[in-house]
Length: 305
Picture 1 (cartoon, rainbow, N blue to C red):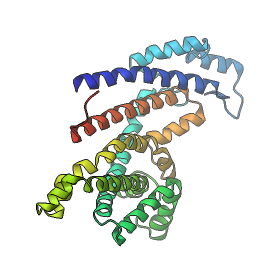
Picture 2: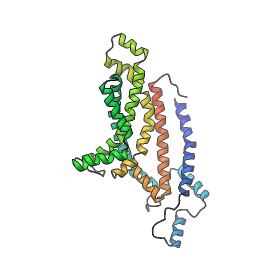
Picture 3: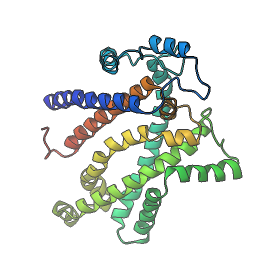
Picture 4: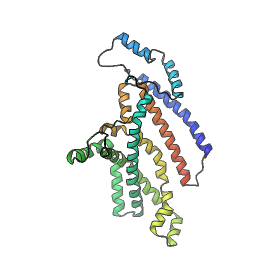
């Protein structure tokens, strides 16, 4: 297991290198720059700004200099926020996105797992059809549609919660439900499919023949194997929740890293775009590694390779 983890961590280095290189040159080839504004800047001021941030150097020199800073964990200064570094911005905004992601994941698991198990146990009944309909609704309705609808009804019509902001616990409800409901639909369908496959196995029939209760069969024998598709999905899903929250953060005006990432792209803030991409890429790789470890733990037939 230690060799497996070490080998996978070594694979992170070339993956991140390719991502950093591709992102670096892509943002530089985009028209405009971090100091492009509607009102033209005096040439001498623009020249001083570029010299201060090292943008007057050749592109390859800037690239190699940035790689050296990344090796020491320094994402550099922000081009749009004076006297602030990318590390400081990430440290301020990331906890908000992590909180939103954690609450959304809790919603997805609390809703998706029971519905999937119930749909598999009560196959081809009205409970199965209801759970499948809810799952299909979550998959078909995108977050940028569901979010405004929830705001329109619960915030504007009923006045139970605020329409936007990130102040009290009530402000966490609608964003978490909006983001979590989409992933709960996928979890529900994967749980149902995994449980149906396990419930048709011979050892489940043997357990029923021995007189084991249905509850014991589901919780003791079927659940562990039935959750394997869900566990394999959770790695990319958690990464998707964290990286895909920028839509929710924009709709509900949440001061998270996802919203800052979108703003940095519009502002041509090269270093902030690169720092956010590197952070998200690292999270995706590590979360996928954790999902692989959990799969082997749940299914001893698999081996660390």
